[in-house]
Image (cartoon, rainbow, N blue to C red; front, side, top):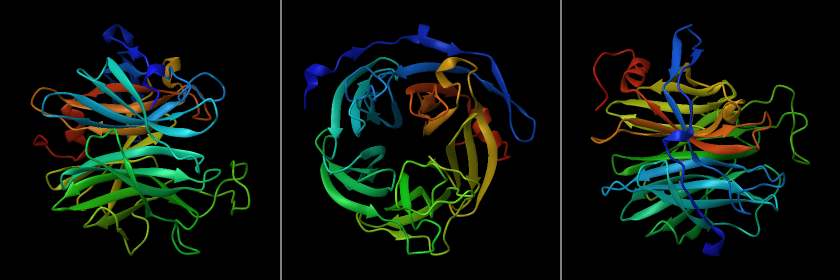
Length: 337
């Protein structure tokens, strides 16, 4: 790893870019963006993208008992290839970049990590595309989160004619009841003009969200009934709070949310966080990640802020969100534990 290429990026709260942007949910209820802070900008050759303006997104965050923030995230290099990077922070704002921790010379796209602790190891599930944007979900394991051993495909596209027969990607994995549960998005075709050759395309192409489970982290079983949420929703992150599930997902106008009692039947709650109203996320947020609260901090959302409609010029932002807004999604008065 060429760590000498990676600089320490210090960005403090003066980087706050929005404090009073009002959006509206589908029900018309006002949504206030309390605070948006820039957390990570593209600064290296493996993050600057072919256009040179930077493209980092898809953060997966763990906070250790010591308070150390650890983030794995995707970055697109000058050569057009995506790789997974790693950085550390004491406050979630000022980050020390360690560099690339997972790449694949045989693949065009290695990105969208989801990292969980399971059976004394770290498991990373990520999107891999050998060419174009025809994705599958692979898995790698690690003891320290920096050196990763690739374990091959965890989830592949479905059978011909199924809702995810072309591609699957952007996994979100949690540990519950001694097993792993994954949510991911998939497609059976792509819209016209998509950057892929010799694949099915359709004017009404759309994404959907699937669910799969595993007892060992390697072999996965898909939900037999098919997709669990439609509506062209993708780039999801799922958390479980007690007996409820909360999903956040990417949107061109901000970050959306959906709720569920079993992880299978979902209610789309519409927009949770609106765009800030500044150039940094003019075209919404991609691949959001919700960091659940601890005693010393509240809810935090990390996401790729899209400066371009094409979602290929992103920085990673940190958004603080109040507990009351999360509680309100479940239409209940008691606080999330």
